[in-house]
Amino acid sequence: MWRPFFLGLGATLACLGVECMVLDHVVMAAPSKPVAAPTSFLPMLEPPQTGKVITPPDWAPWSLLSAGAVVILYSFTIPQRMEGG
Image 1 (cartoon, rainbow, N blue to C red):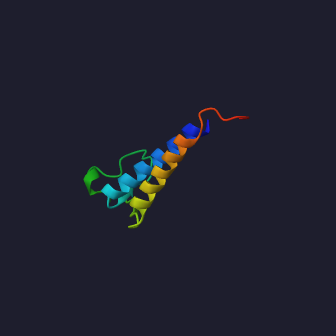
Image 2: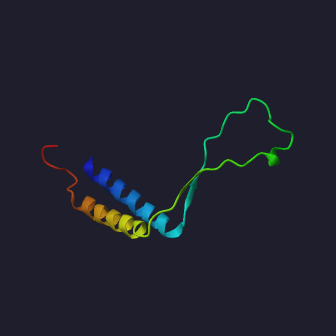
């Protein structure tokens, strides 16, 4: 049970590290508000919804990638069947 958990955690960290290398910033979409009726006949004139902008620091890509690689290697050293659990 521990081996797949650490393998998934390491893969997730490594994927986040690769994504941080590729992307400069991420814009999280703002939650949409339910609209009962259109507020105007020209929806293009409505102001756009703004979201939260996340910019990863310079150290994040390599740190996440290396931590993910270490955790993946650790997961391979865990025996498949541990005694007593």
